[in-house]
Image (cartoon, rainbow, N blue to C red; front, side):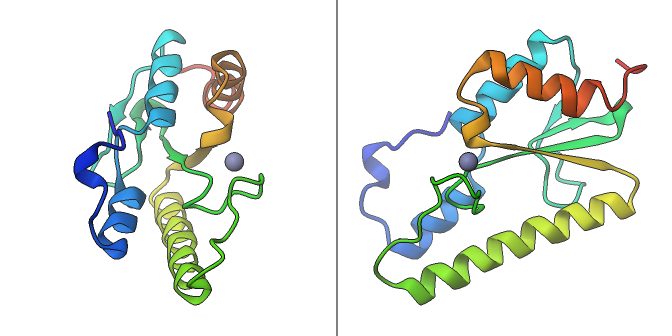
Length: 145
Ligand SMILES: [Zn+2]
């Protein structure tokens, strides 16, 4: 699991931000896995052969799921404030993230996958999260395991 350990305290800003954006096994991601598993869903993790390396892949349902941090992927929920300094740097960085997300989703759809995005703020409460996964994953492919 990703934690803010002491060894991460003093790297350069650039390497730190890249590490954050690409990090796997984040807390919200672990919450989504746990709930999906409890709902009896079968999935694989981080399939490198798919665009954007989706966090969870429900192959029989042709659904690729991404768990996105609100700050890094710019969710409109109040957790995505732009830092007050180096505004140009951050704006460019966020634009790249959002474009990368959009490109991965477009490439997946072209290849016949449906994309589901779950935001970090939606993964806080396991009961709400179960409802979200039921609606976005199970309801969209009801006859598959
Ligand atoms: Zn959010």
